[in-house]
Image 1 (cartoon, each protein chain N blue to C red):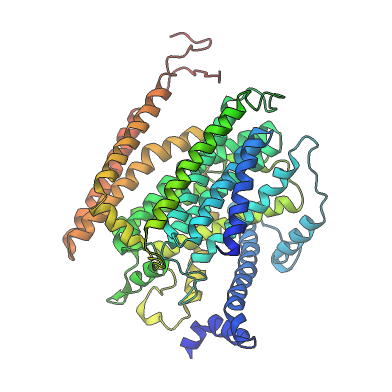
Image 2: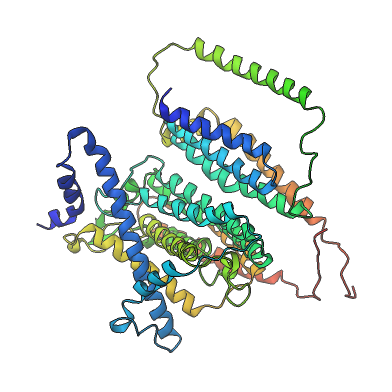
Length: 391
Length: 172
């Protein structure tokens, strides 16, 4: 019975599609899966927004929204109605075509990333040989939309926010990719389904998730840092800093276009959490072998929501990082550590099973973390402030 | 030549023409990135998955942003100069471009005719690309790595020369 529950969405789709003539069935199945994704993830976006506002509120010693439904549960509905009925103000000097296209392209590109995520057993929309590369290609395309948004508003604050945002996203793109390359190296494939299947094995009841290995833990930490920076979440949210830049690159957007940016950001957050769970946390596999009867999609979405809670927790706790500290951190600390993580993953692979490889790999990572941290901090001189103007 | 090819090819050519004919420079850069995306879709249509996705990742994700940053950081104003977009020797330029295109197209058509017809499309997996890169093409790989290292060092040196700039209002 639980096997049927595990595959219930696949069975539902096949049952609905079976009512159609034979040569329409393939494309109807794909369309149905796409509709399911477009329906589910904005619903998760609504839950995430509510969770964030209530969670941040409690962390800041206040209640979140609590007027609209019981405990404020219908707040996303009110937000949706508000954003649909607000007047859409576009500045006269703004570049209307690009201004209109920026949120559209952002939402399109962000939703494309879901095509390769394995959301359960056999539940990948498009199983591609180079699935991980497709995901990162879509992530890279979303950087251009931020620039489009900031530039088309003809507003200096927006442009500053957009430039900062794009610089930050490019800088953290490299650690994001490099920390995933370690996973690809050990698995031997770019196919996300194979990566999950490689982690779906158990020894003494505990799973072979990559986060439970030294290089996997380091890789996951760096992936989480890079993912937080890629989606412009606090503590890396200087491009949209509320106290610095009004609202950064989406200052001039109101009404539904602002809601589209908001949607794009949170859906991107869900998407990158989905990729993180696939690469490091075992995707749809269950944490203990005895719990294999629980449907696989429950584990996947549970892990994604746990990652969202971690994002919200970080936002409520950590202060915002300054732009140059952010860039220094990316290029001088995280990037060398990801390269070192590749070396450690290779050592892990070639040392064979046993306790020795755990000790050696953990020792190398801890020593290099302490070493890079100490040398990095030592080269800071705080002299008088110098100004450099663009010529 | 399927209908999908014609649609994508038309889109790519239109975007490339827009990239040279539009007045606003940032619009040109954006249509250039649309051209890159169109090329990537053409790669995907030919079943070259790795090439297509790498094209998006590298060109749209990095080169287009580089172009846009270069435009933003080097233009003194946002409005383009009126007139003067087309050079006075455009006829000679057109002739040279047509000659180069004819040479390249002739070479491609000649090489395609040299291959046996009705060849089965090889499905190249990323594994095969990786193995080929590490065994048969390892020398080009290392040379490209050397080239990229040289480019990175050059970029660092160019950026470093700005350091001894005049410090405004501060004693040394």
